[in-house]
Length: 259
Length: 317
Image (cartoon, rainbow over all chains, first blue to last red; front, side, top):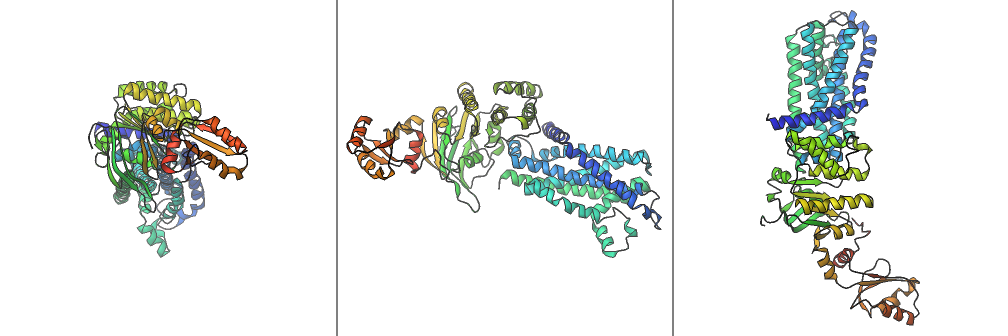
């Protein structure tokens, strides 16, 4: 990337961060709601730990992976809504009259998402550690978890950008939000896949990529260094990021072409 | 098409799906340093033309050159020489005025050392220094328009597109913006392509005016030449009794050719204005008049003559 393109990414990212921080609701909701669900789930699902074959005695350690994915879903909505607003207000047209490269615009827009993602990761981790969760993978696992989480945030953020560019409507993106939650609930969020007794649910969770993102994060907390889980988690997050950025780039080019 | 013009369009067309031709084969040429007023009612095709010339919307057919670059094939080059303030001031309500200018300066690749001074210079020029560090969502409409203009000027463009820059502004803000546009053209040699639906704006500001209606340019020239083309003044009369309109029309026909009037009866006078003669003729026929007005030719008369409709209050699209 040239120095000029890097500068473009930086200034768009800086704007994205400033915008994010100046909308307290966009910061607080992705922090508070996943933690609320964490509290509810860790109390309600505690009996699960007595199931034969359950991988840990700590339901909090097991369920701590979920806020990370929920937080990433919020990132999708915020990133997409912000870009949709730029389209609706004409700000995107203003940007497109400058020599900015489309990919720099997309990467820059994701800057605010990543910043919020880092903040989320710090809070979720702090809550988990204060509540007594110990990382089976040690301090290095914390760093790897943050890296994986940022990749997941990028993947979902890029999906948000793509949706914004296709629909041009913040309302449309918010309308799709419940659909993402369906993916979350039909996953290994609440129970390991090997303990799912309902066949269709097990099959759905197995083909649902969200299961592998959760399991990648979870493995670092409760198992240690699970190469397969990490490879699947990183692989799926990287693939979704790449595909979503490519689709978003194409959608941006089409939108800029005005066709 | 030559390269001696700042802006040129030849048979430029834009069709929208399921809609009429928004721009229907316009030809125009704007000289460097000229203020070109593009006048027309809402929906006439002004903004669509600007969007095509600024490369934000592809033309369906025809050709356009801006700064010597083809709008269809040399988009980045075109965007490099133009500044644009589009119809809606596209600003981020969460950013301050200064942050907008610094963002724009960065994206326009101004050297780092120049960005802050250039932002300060433009803030001062548009009178926003005191409000520079306030978020834009607290700005008035006039302040947003002035910031929009400043943003368009960050990279010192040779050609400036202003799409209805004074719509919704109060007189004071409008006058201030006119002065800045004049200064840009006169002192900096900037070519200004300005769309407006305000007759006065086109009249006082533009070196030349193109009048667009239903996507076609129906008249073009200096305001003076266009008015001279229409030439003679008109007299418009509103009888006290609406039933007298036909009698008034008959009487006035003796003084000139009838023209369309939205309020009463009007004629374009055949010679010098003879108001006394008209009043005497009406009096002789015992016609009571509620309103009698002498109009010198205006751009609205030009529009009326070319389209059969008045531009003022026109909202038919």
